[in-house]
Image (cartoon, rainbow over all chains, first blue to last red; front, side):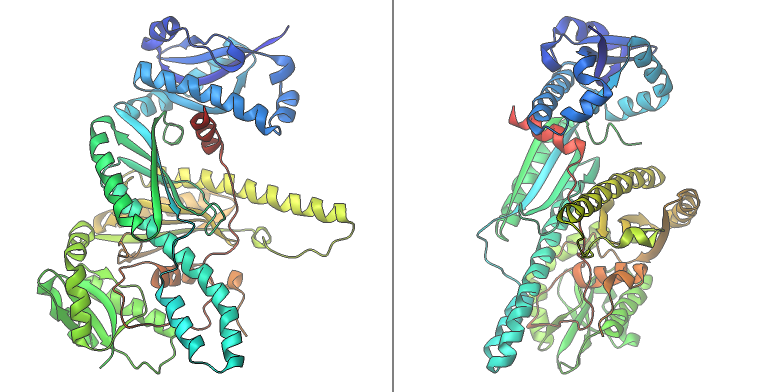
Length: 258
Length: 222
Length: 61
């Protein structure tokens, strides 16, 4: 049976003993060990080529159940590494190498950048903050109110045409409210975070997400983050939005950034 | 006398727009600058650009917060009432943003063909129509991935002030990245030349830098 | 005739977006609506980046 190496994340070589003794298991319940090269280690486990070779993998990733279960296992390993080591560079799902030698080659190639990243992430964790529009919040927008007044004052023909426009106006006004809520949230987060990054969202989409931001926060600023989130929840709650924060996460976003 | 709000300044700077026809309505913590406005007037692009021109002129003289276009007050008293309700928050925004400017960094796709995201394609067979639809979605995803990569390059060029950057990927068919950076004036030349060099290196987008502008994006609306 | 938004000058659209949708808001008696300028939020795509996929999967565990 041919084995490939699945890599979860990268950490400092000096942490190798701690990883080894942690007895972590990853994808398909296989044990997670270290591949060490120079100043870095890669946390890795074996996967079967039959299932994780390129062709097979491309087929499997279309199956959301298959993918979700393994993505969860991937995150479980990186979450434990964050707890154990304090800093880890998590890789995106699916970093698979032919053998340990290729893994070491990868570590050699990127060594300088990786060391810089590990140093800059030390003492920080990543959080995700989501701002979502409440489903039943009333539209409270000057544009829409003004239009409603116009409609009320118009003769029937014009009222009909203006009412059609109201559909467009409502979505534009919703989008602007979402954008305002997002900017309010970002201003609050910029006060506590070392870095902020807006993830892509569909504006005015059915899931009503106005903002999804990854933020990097120094561990000692976590109380300040909680305070900022609570204040934000109060501020945006009055405007028909709710705020959720999840973390600490391994630095999926900022660990990948230059 | 109806008034159109233009900008918020510190109380001591209330007179800065007198030569521009701007009246000042002062609170204790901030002052509002406004123009008289004829409510029968229809607002279009020229009025928007005029709004920007006035704000820019004020901003070149003193720190200010730009007002979103379109808030009209019946008279100075009406404006004063609203101002006083909000002035603590506005003063703290002015303190936070005052000495910084906004750079608007836009990466537009060079290939305009890429930009036609939402066209109705007359279907041949049903399957052909579905395949064209799938193509477009895959193309959208590829553009999104590429746009995120461009964001990463931009952020490394702006490494001086990483916190104060906001961005959106693929906000419009023609645009890969729309980014706003809040910077101090002394950093602008360095950033502009780095972005110019980056723009020359990127084969699929052109980079346009506008500003320095008043901090539209970093102001909190309410 | 209204111009097609996609052909509007990209830098101009960036400016107009800020003038209409950003900046401080002091709500007055009247909000001026702007004629002939219909743009901004068009053609957005949904992308669940691998970052989001992993985090969401992890959150469900």
